[in-house]
Structures are given as structure tokens and as C-alpha cells.
Length: 386
Image (cartoon, rainbow, N blue to C red; front, top):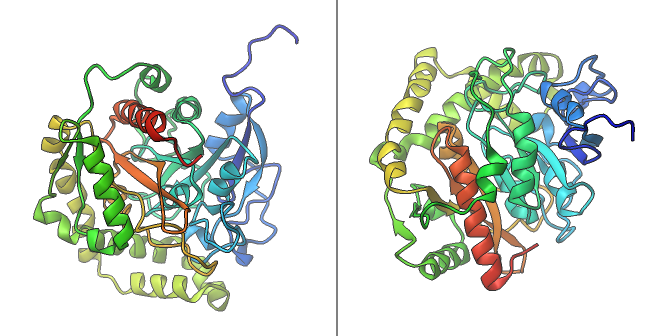
């Protein structure tokens, strides 16, 4: 009204996972140990959202310290089912039309899994792409900031504002501004090729998930999809991730463990205690494996635009005591690869089940363009969950 330019998110409501500091509202990190905590500064991501004109609608529920113990959020598709975690409130808020956009984090499967369970689009960009300054710290090697939306164009819109270099995050590197919206709005220069990878954790998938996923692959056809096996070095990737994550938990949550052990959940206490016993040489060897694993993807992404794999083992658990298994996210999180979950399948009770696309490191533009192509083609042919 004053004639001044407005940001690209002007007036857009956004939900903020309650592990991002906000100067004007509490940030309690899903634990009674941080009850009443009032930061005096916004997280970098929140500052960027405000600068772009976004309206911070409020804080969304997280699990305990963004780990596994559930919060009070329920799945909008069935209130007796889990919304996933740890970004449970952000995924559910978008699914329930409370907000069109929300932010979350992923250290194992905390964006992709709740997005899949709640039937929305969840995107975890390349590691080190969005600042984690003034966000609850778990692991510099594994922590990612990501987003939830109901369209890939909305994902591109918000991420262009968030992918800004921040010297306070040691994993970030200065680079040119991302052109996500441009890439998403353009058709691929050639028909995309997808590598169907079951990965070493395929046996964890429910039988219906296996059946429906293979049927989905068959429907896409051999001109689009080719089954590819990961090298044997990936057979220990899940254990490598566990070593890094639990050791870092023991360090990051040392104060909480020392002053409030009895007020932590049993599952988190056990993870911290296992982490306390891991030797430095084991931890260092695990971290050194990350670039080795990433190098093994080079041949795959030379031939294929993205990896196609399940987002979860199946539909959301039919109870509120579990956030479900993140096992189909672990390898990609360990390697820091960009991932996106698309609500294109249904489980045995009709709940959403996500299709996961994984892109090459730092090739987020191509991943989102490929995801838009796949999402549009499947939605046009059969309709999608949302």
C-alpha cells in the first residue's frame, strides 16, 4: 500500500518447528527440561522468512529434543495414527491446511517420514544448504533444515529465500543464488531417467509397500526406470550413521543428561549412553566414510537424474506411541544428498505412502525439476493423495 516492494513470501503463513529460536515466542525443543525457554534472537532461517515477508504463525510440535519420543501431534488423515517425527507438527499443520508452508529438520528421517505419513511434500536439501544457526544442535555432520508444502513450486519458492550463506554455520559454503523456481517451471530437457534402488534396507518394507512400489516402477516403464544395486560398501551405512548420530547426541545433550536424566525418555537415555561408550577412533572412522560413500554415487548420477526409493516402510503406525521407522532415509541423510517425498501411493488402510526421490549432492535444481515432472505426470494420470 505504501508503494514499497514486498518479499516473495509477503503475507504467507509459515509454521516453525519448535527447535528454531524465535525472539518473540518460546522455543522449548519438545522437552520439559527447556520449558519456558525464551531466546533473545531469531534463528537465521526465521530472520530470512521475516525478511521475505512471511507471517510466523506459531511454533509446531516437535518430538523430544527432535529425536524419537512423540509429542502430542496426531495424523490429520486418522487421529489414531502417528504423524511421524521429529517434525511431526510441521507436517501435520501443512496436511491439515493450517499453514501452506512449514519448516523442519532431519538428522535421520525427520522430514521425509512425517511428510510421507501426512500426505504432503517434504524436501530435505543438500547438507549445508540452509543455515542451522540458532537451531537445536544434534550433529553437524547429519543435521539438515528442510521444508513442507503442498506443491513443489511452493517448495522452490520458500527454499530460494532460505538457501543463503550464513557464516555462523560451519557446513555452509558461499555460492550463487539458487534458481529453484526457474528450474521447476521448466520441463526437463530430456525425459528423466530414474534409478530404482531398493538399498540394503529393502527387507524392512512392508509387503504391501514392496508390492505397490514395484507395481509403480513397472507402470513407469523401462524407458524411465532401471533397477540399480548399491555397492557393497553401503551395507554398513546404517551402522555408520548410528555411530555418528549417537556419539553426537551424547555430546550435544550432555547438559540435559547430567541435570535431568530421569526426565528424558528411556529411548533417548539409551541412545546417549550408547554414544558415551563409542571410542573416538570409531567415530572418526565413521565420519571418514561419508565422502567415500558419496563418491560411489558419481556413476549413478552420471546416468540417472534421480534415485527412486520408498520414503518409509509403509503407512503411518496405527498408534501414537511410535513415530515410525526412518530406515529408508538413513543412507541419504548420512551422505547429505537432497531428498523429496511425494504423496503418490496409499497404504493398506488408505493412508498416504510416500515415493522418495534422491538427487546428486548439490544438484537440488535437477532433483526438484525431476520431482515436478514425476508428480505432474502421475497426478495427471491417476490423481494423487492430496
